[in-house]
Length: 117
Length: 252
Image (tube, rainbow over all chains, first blue to last red; front, top):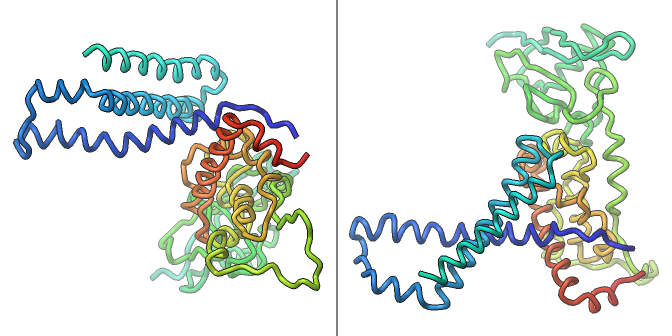
């Protein structure tokens, strides 16, 4: 039997991994940079220190993964919100282009920023 | 406590009503009476023309699903006193065509269900003399909760995706497919995959989770669907990366 080729499994994988990495990492980043450093729970690293951390290829890769996957998570969820929530499925093609295209553009911008800082 | 409670029941009599109308009945408010007992009282004493389905009266047969105050419920397991002082609005299950009064047409589900082969599939049937297909308690735990489904259709009634996409295979059918996929005695997972991983199968589900919230038997269809999404996505990606190894394993 021929299976209908569908990009849905791949898109769902990106969606689900985006949700997982965002749920795991965003609270940590928010806690560090939004709470712990500002109120002095932890000593604030110097600009030079953070700059050095950011220049480690591993940090760049992890931050890029977080940005890109979280964007694809958004794209998939927003696509179905528009389809089902606002019942706009008749505009499926522009919605798909807007959502996943937006995630691709956002990922490219994230990569550019991470490589040029 | 009041001695009576009002049931506002949706009536639809083909040939008489052009659309469903609400009709009120006063029924005794007794402590152990379920909505179904109230409806039976109406049929026996007040209005013999009222139609509704029921059979076991104990949450096993799955016949008496109705919408009670907007929520899909088994009318035999939902008690009048929980809604006192009333009134209680009783309507047919949403998302299904109404045949008459509270009786809905579930042919759509009956057509979809066999497509997922909800039975044990074996490549080669062992002869009866060889005895049972043995299974450990741990292997049974894998699928047992999904085997509790009584096909009551509350999950279809609660599912917003099914209301928008009538082609969606639906929560119970997918959960029942998983009931057999996860059974150690079954070898039919590959045969079920084409139906389950089609756009009308698991990928239509957006994980609203209402199906699991309303299930009267504690089945978690939403969980079954999410779990199968991971299985199907992993298989698709494996096939994409290693097209030969998997296709050679598949039978014609």
